[in-house]
Amino acid sequence: MDHLIEKTLAKKEIFKGRVIDLQVEEVQLPNGKTSTREVIKHPGAVAVIALTADHKLVMVKQYRKAMDRVLVEIPAGKLEKGEEPIVTAKRELEEETGYTCKELKHIISFYTSPGFADELVHLYTAEKLEVMETKASLDEDEFVEVIETSIEEALQMIQTNEIYDAKTAYAVQYLQLRSALGE
Amino acid sequence: MDHLIEKTLAKKEIFKGRVIDLQVEEVQLPNGKTSTREVIKHPGAVAVIALTADHKLVMVKQYRKAMDRVLVEIPAGKLEKGEEPIVTAKRELEEETGYTCKELKHIISFYTSPGFADELVHLYTAEKLEVMETKASLDEDEFVEVIETSIEEALQMIQTNEIYDAKTAYAVQYLQLRSALGE
Image (cartoon, rainbow over all chains, first blue to last red; front, top):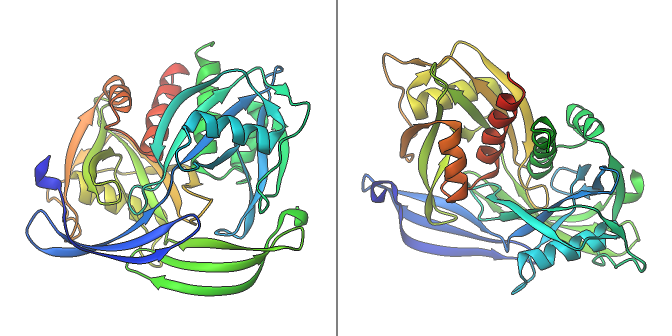
């Protein structure tokens, strides 16, 4: 697939932030011409499909500045440097929901916005949740509200755009598929 | 849900690009403290679950600079200013694959990376594809290779990380679900 590759001729660091970095690359296209690519570097993230013992999906309401609105999302968070994704996933589950789980299972990883960013999300399931005796603390700039819904309620929230993000839509569809397959 | 909202105190434009803009906002958190948020502004995008008459899924191989690798994705593209998403979807389908379709159906829209970007992807199905007599041209800096696979082959490509992005994983799972429901 070498005929598709774009070779970087020059790279300019525009911004180094708390969460993301931005660089602009001058590239040589497969036809020899040049163009520019705007690239966001992100540390990667985890997300958890968390199910209570009575099969409710645990999600969090969280304000998102990029859209200036509150979204309902499955528990998620950025990877810390050097931390195994499954460790981050368990920590985020505990911090955001107050539940814990003996065994998380990896189901899929995917890039969220390959056209401009390298954010890779690792998605896990956490079943038979147990309430933590001592609730873990959130990051100091993080504020969330926990909700628990049935799959049917979650589907309704997709219709009303309360659930409005890719990883959570994937999670709800995953549960629909599992139910359809009788698993 | 006012208790979750972060009020913007100041906004700094860092970068205005061809595809994305970056701004950093100083915000007041729900507890009165301040923090910063890094926000990517994106025009939004469309993606198409395109199925041939013999039920093959049409995808494109495309080099992605952010990951420095070739990914297999469903046809997709950025919204042009003032263009209806369904019009963009038909245009991208035609330009990237050489197929056209009488009727596209909207199935879901979702934010891809709500933690740092406002990119909203509108997802459509296009069925009973017809080969175009005159192939539409790609953007001058776009190079893709078209492939057609069964659902089983697409699932295999998820295992091998050739399919490695959220919208395409969602699309494959959508087809699995439809098949499981006998639709």
